[in-house]
Length: 320
Image: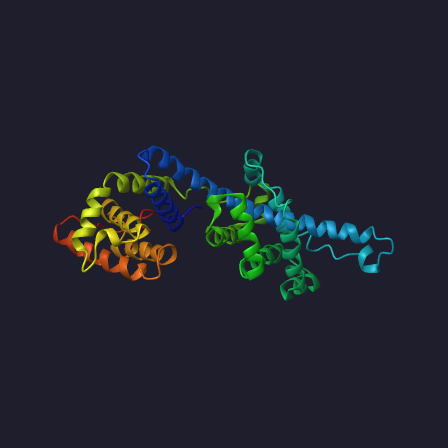
């Protein structure tokens, strides 16, 4: 599940924290990196639990209506399509989800306001009305409903997004800034679901393959070990700028980029540069993207001239 885009972000966050703290214990920071990745995986499951808790809330609303002192005809004969959604029921029985929850209990039950707000937004949407009024629905319709709820309501409504982000920040410091990309993994997984797989439907693993785990650990180890070399390389390519005036985040990003350039011959130069420039734009100063781009471009020229930048052809499963 944790692709290399998110792995690079986690790496930069931990490296930055490591430098800010002035720690001399890279082993502890390395463990912190692995914990951060594990927590990102927990968020993946936490968002699936959100589907289950919204469904439970809808069931509670139906039960409340039935138990009114003077229930209406609609209260007594409610449309059960949403609470009987076949995808949601399959998810509730999913073996991987239930196994994860045994070791990592998680629920949205303490956040009734956000659950109510989300359901109210769902209920008011044309997406919901069309689904509930359709003469009949298929399993694919049930699955698509939840994919679109995530895409169009949970991840697009500003009020809902702000509420969820506040909850995630309260729950774990490792979940900050991870909502959008993790939600994209959830919608990708929903597409993968097949009714025939039942409770045995596979969810995404924490790492796509062993190569991704080796990638992020090698990136950390080599960036820390060769930090001085990378610093000298940056200093040698600066134009009209002093190294000590560079934002620490920019230095960390460029050091990690240099590590990837030198240690992963199957990853194209442009892919590495583009990924770290985007991180600079998102996580550093307003001008960092342009600055990092310029410095890294000159470093690439220097490394090529010194025959230190060796790239090979495509290897399936290795390029990113």
